[in-house]
Length: 261
Image (cartoon, rainbow, N blue to C red):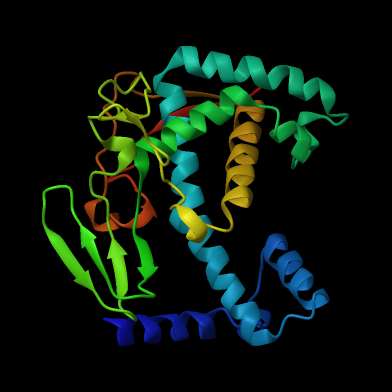
């Protein structure tokens, strides 16, 4: 319930407080640089802890699984992997730095990858299943497609969970490889909602997309990858993760990798 959620949040804030983290050995350089950035912005220690919880949620709850699915889809689809590599190779020529020393790509390069953008968009379509919450600001009636109607009171909090979300609706995506974006002859405004919709879309979606693309780019630029079992089945979703953003796999998928010459 709400009280328990608040208690869990409070515990996480304490665990990730700057004072507590300062006593830990072997802190990551990323963590140190992020805390320094927050300090330079004048962010209080209380808000620093909350910002770290957000980072923990974004990276471990969503960006990590998203990168997993993108790489797995590419490894299972050789022609898609070849297309992405074909897009990445010219990009490497634009970066005046050896691949072994490369830690990031300029944003303008990340924004010029339509093939990787398409792969990421399709991967999110197939693996995102977020809760969508809304606050009811006026008394209203919510009509349903089956004729039912629900009365909502001002001040209520509405939680929507599209178990069959638009991106998985067979009336919209009858063929997963074909995209019409229409239903009952009408073009949909939100034909895929991995980041939510409306004014409450994920504010960090731009950062998340860039981070996922950075990771995938660096992995493909530095390593040759292949599935140990080429005909491996896609892992099923961990059903306990439904509603929390990106779905996570039930099990690992073994891969073989080597540093690219």
